[in-house]
Image (cartoon, rainbow, N blue to C red; front, side, top):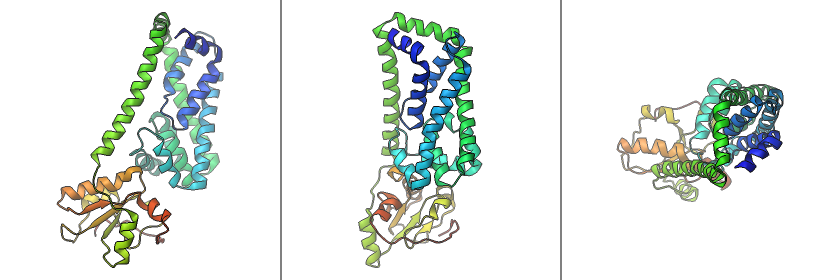
Length: 316
């Protein structure tokens, strides 16, 4: 642990830059503890506020700009790819979309305080057409508040944190082992939480090939598009009816309870479609199946896509 302490003393700015950059790129490596420690070194007079804030904000802006450009170039599909590298991906797209759609670019002011949301919100800003100058302003202010709060707290409680660090140094290799164990426990918990969530939505799926075959044979099932309204504009499966998650409680299906129903979305692991399916199954519908891979898999297979301006439909 003493080596880590000495590295922070000598290369604090570089370590802060790397820590913030890697977290904003989506890796499950929390940068907030590093910034807290940096606040202690500011209190000890080894670094200045200006230098630490500048390096943290710069690291965040570089990483977030990369995701912004990816969102601008590849559209909303990049968010699904981004979520797959996260250890808690399956609700982050929809939650971040809801936050960003409600507040717009000002949502970037708080996204960094929500683990896993910063990179998603940056990609969403790019895919939704937010101007880069507006993105940089809001994201930069958000990074300033986020990093500044950590540095301020580290400085405020510098005596307590300093004492804890000295205790870890005195523990030698056991102190280092304890820190590594805590980090490993954090990553393991996030992984376990993701697997538990995915398991809770486990049910039979239908492949895009099977659905396309049913349509070609004239046995088209009820097809429900469960995406948010703004995502529907990218195109949908022919015959689909639009039922976002928030409208499912008002949904009325005038069909037999055993009639086939296929739901799709654009989420990792078909999360939104599976949630809607669960709600419908609780109401007695039995032949409910999410579409494996969602609209992205359907599009990638080269099957027909309809596009036009649509409005949300809550009654079927």
